[in-house]
Image (cartoon, rainbow, N blue to C red; front, side, top):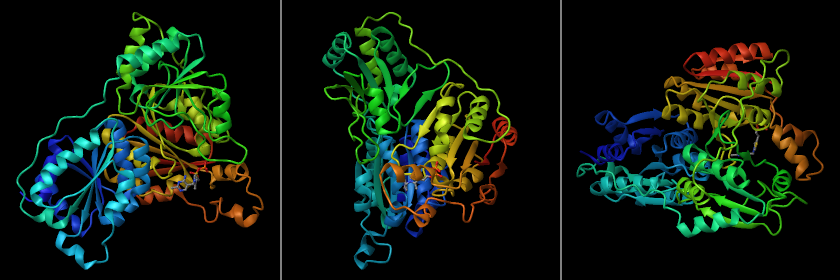
Length: 514
Ligand SMILES: Cc1ncc(C[n+]2csc(CCOP(=O)(O)OP(=O)(O)O)c2C)c(N)n1
């Protein structure tokens, strides 16, 4: 067994059996080893930002890491923006970065770079393997670090000679470092606060926004009258009819300020007090009211579901019926294909348990509101503000959940960053429907231009925010990358194309001309 085989076998032993990647010469032994470890599923991506974003989507849905194979420093650098997003999502990812052979580095060959320097800001753990003999142990440690609560990116650098030299077999998984329980005194303290008559809200972001955690939060709210809030870009939320009602914080700072204006106590679960996404002249960055008291019920590495369940029990146990989201399916639209019509059609037609990768930016504002009362589904937003993650996240989610329909709702500007994801969706025959909102503009930046108070913008400035000349033909781009693609210009066309996509399995793209 060589080092590359030892690496892949150890990954599989540790439960990591999907690898998104894009290889080069220094990773050829890794590539060759794929045939000797058939349990590992290799998913080829044509750009590293697709591979890292796919690993993020995979981790958010599978709740375990995928591996990512990257080609030296430049390959890693191409993947950094989506690693940044993944870090903000606390997604576990095992990055394997090939490097020159240890003895070759001294010659400063063209691809030599500071890999550790590229990796450090996005990784909780970086390690460069020194010998094939330690590959197995290093790999098991890497997986353990990435899975440590709440989940993190680790980077394992693998010089080519450690991949091709003789190794000492594979390692087994190390113990899982799960979330820490929250201390009983903390639960008592929060329970006391919730009984003191002040206006309280619980702000959530992580695991507790699903399943038992969400139910417990719903009961706590029903018992105490506190509000339930979640971060604007919480990595994975259960939405739709029947779910415990949670208010999503709005995007704009002044709207957050308005929403929180009456809150006297903010109880934080795996998150921090909300702030403005950007700084703007004359708009506050800090969005909580003056004098608001903050209490941490569970930090990110702690067990938020256990904390909410314990809080519920401390507050009284027994039954309390949470407020739930009612089902409100809008009618199917007819006529012009507006943002409202798009939202109504999607809410009407999207099946139960769908996964929605949301990077529609301005075209998605109504979709968020209207889908929230549609059939139960899960929502994956862009967590770190670096656009170009929606298509890769959809790809990774589809690999993690082959039995569920994945819908990626995309702005055309955002989709252009990582459109190569379409090719992998086609190659892997993934059940993803891409709704491509072609408004031919960076519309949000037109809003931001005004909000930041930038003056003097004329035709040249505005042309930087406009994508009309030339127009990207997304139906042809999708087709060219191996995905069945159509274009919708009216509500009737969109309804026909989207309902067909919802009924059939496999990759589809619908270019929505807005
Ligand atoms: C990596 C990265 N580069 C640039 C930006 C700045 N940016 C934010 S939104 C946006 C345009 C989005 O356009 P589109 O997806 O078409 O959505 P629209 O604004 O038209 O609704 C840009 C360029 C960013 N957020 N991330």
